[in-house]
Amino acid sequence: MSPSAATKCWATSISASPGPPPRCPPLPSNHRAYTASEEIGFSTDANPETKWCVIHDGRPIQWQVEASQPMPLARYSFTSANDMPARDPRTWKLEASADGKNWTVLDERQDQPAFAERHQTREFTLATPATARYFRFTFMPNPGVEHFQVAEIALAGVTVSPRTPRPP
Ligand SMILES: [Ca+2]
Image (tube, rainbow, N blue to C red; front, side, top):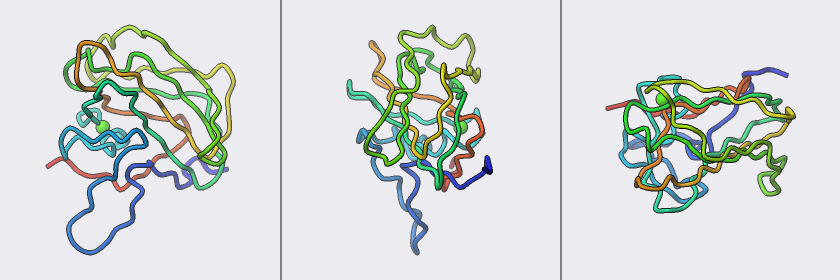
């Protein structure tokens, strides 16, 4: 199984069309990026200088990918953004699905310490590796801040290749 099998980020899976570049559709949790240069595609552009940032509205925030074939997953990582540690991932769960409808929890983390540094990558290992076509993170909104943000989200061995926008 190729680790580079086409895998797409849910919110950037729209196809190209004539005219101006389409904006990313709403996330599964219906959150919108704070600015056009902080869309979800920036969480998978392999650039720690760019970030995905949303106003959480007090609701869980979801990030989801769909692979063209089942992919094995044993580890994942987050990279903190450029500023505001209070917006970093703190409490989340990772789920997998074969059909995008029925989900199984692979990993849960509660009240994780803030990232010690900006642009820091922290890796998390699954207790039991899993193989699935769909993977989804659900991040709980952090208290005391209006935003959630992360510079990179990476699933080890899974190449996410969305139509990544570029910073202005
Ligand atoms: Ca990035």
